[in-house]
Amino acid sequence: MGTATWDALLLRVIFCFLGSLPHACVVVLHQARTLAHHMLADGAFQRGELTIAVADGEKYQSWLQQFQMGRAALPAFAVNHVAANALFAGSASCFQQAAPGADTPHEEQLAWEIDLPQATQLVVGATVGVVTPVVPGEAEL
Amino acid sequence: MGEQLRRAARTKPHDRTLLATNVRDATHAEVANAAKLLHFMITCVGPRGLTSVSVRHECLRVSSMKRWWAAAALVLACAVSVQSLLDDQAQLVTEVDHSSLDTFLDEHPTAVVEFYAPVCVNVVVSVCGKLILAFYAPRCVVCVCVCVWRPLQWCSVCKKLAPEVEQLASLVAEHGLDVAVAKGNANEDHILKERFDVQRTPKFIFFRNGVAHAFKTFRSGEAMFSKVLATLQPDAPPFSPAKQFSDPMKLTEWLFWRGTDGGRLEPAAVLFQPVVEERTSDELVSAFHEFAIANVLKMRFAVVTGEDVLQLFRMDPDHATVALYTEHDEGKHVFVGQPNKLGAFLLARLVPLVVPVDHITLLKVSRSTPLLVHLFVSTSDLAERKAHVLEQVRTKLGLLPWAQLPGTHCCSV
Image 1 (cartoon, one colour):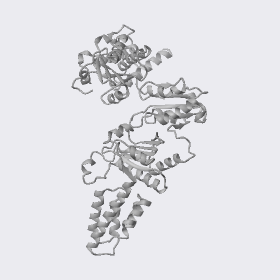
Image 2 (cartoon, helix red, strand yellow; image 1 turned 45 degrees about the vertical axis):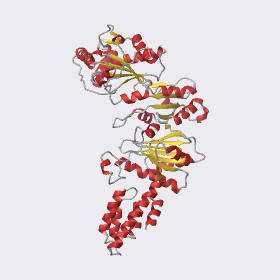
Image 3 (cartoon, helix red, strand yellow; image 1 turned 135 degrees about the horizontal axis):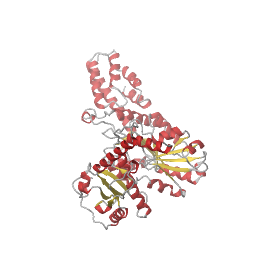
Image 4 (cartoon, helix red, strand yellow; image 1 turned 90 degrees about the horizontal axis):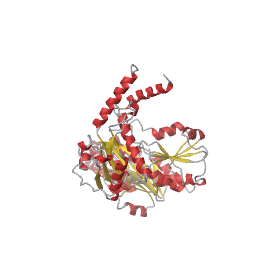
């Protein structure tokens, strides 16, 4: 085997040592970063004006309830306009079926991926008041 | 004797041996019961600067008087003296809150303020203008119920810090410096806590001419006093909270090592300088130090010199460069642009772009950003992907040894 192959194997072995859900986490965070950079490049926001928080929707179902959403909505988008103290719930249109790719361990993908234009539209709409805010649920976010 | 005690307190308020010697000359050997009473009274009043054990011990050593009434009067005198001694010490440290702090600062342009709280979580000391603020927590939770009887009993950390701040106050008074000392409750006074961003203990902040500086390694009253004394010298250079590094290993440890308890890693702005030069000789260097002085509460600062360090960190070997190392996993941000844009650049990147959150970190994240976009994902989806990945690894690695260990380093999702 060549050096590159050994490197790949070594990386995979180390990868397995790193964590219980490392790859999936990396994929999710990568998609979130892609969305963030897309919005920055689009000029919708400046650096420092927003943060994308990735959370476990099953563990924190009370947070979902705060946005009037349930577990069935996962994966889900929601916007908390901290400055305006308003909550906005995203729709399923913010996600789309993942495009088929190389099905190798290091190129594994989730079944879904973020629809960048739709997600950007939701976030921008929430900030300019186009999207209707939700009435917060009982659970405290 | 009371005057002796007060004089002793003024000269060396924390020298318990000296205080005990003064007590010994005026007490009686047969007043053991009275000494116990004195012990109890001192314990109730509080042990600040004076241990009841040493006083009782010295009471038992001396013998001259035998009448109980004299002993009782003596005990009363001792108690009053101790109380007045504590009052004298307390006067060195004035109690302030958010409403009286500004007035206090107007009256005392040079001052030390100590903030305390009933829960042992925060310790911060700062110096403002010529003012030093000390935030700390004097009581642990367990001690709260005891405090009905022992109002000045503090938890171990705060108890350790309190004499040092008092020692600073006494040293300042001894040297005739125009520095007042005060204290405030950081846990109960939330306005004050928010104003000075008291989040972590121990943390010391130095204010000079209305600008905040950091004292993050305040271990003793002498050290604090030396720092104050140095900064008050007329020829003292402009104070900068930036730490100096020339060793790459020490810089790496300072930047990335969370400590054995895996504590929080604060963001750090680092100025890489090819050579040591005057702060005003380069606009970027000057802007960095100005920003560091004004934003010492928001991040750590360091100045790094040495060609080998710059080469190791892949920085420009010919020009000064500023890089921000954030606490969230985004690597470093190297500043490129006009020096007057440096502050906005650093502050904007303190807000994380993408961050995994849980119930502990969400509050902090939501405080730092004006717009929080939530991405909720399902762990079952991720678990399926994980099983698929592991199966692929198992198939393709074949007989190569490998193992999977549970870990929590990545994120909570």
